[in-house]
Length: 60
Image (cartoon, rainbow, N blue to C red; front, top):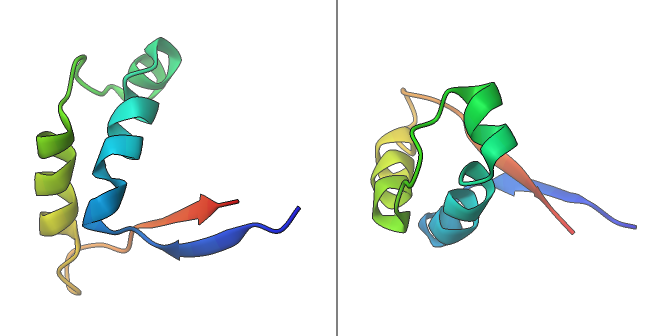
């Protein structure tokens, strides 16, 4: 299986919302429950500034 590591994109917002909506992810990462894709779009747009943070994900 090939795994690709790439920077996050705004189009990843729904997938991140789905992942962080899982009970274990909420408990282990202290995320607020019931976040929306719009919330993740906003977070990703703020994180994408080069001086703020690096965010990456793996893709099959």
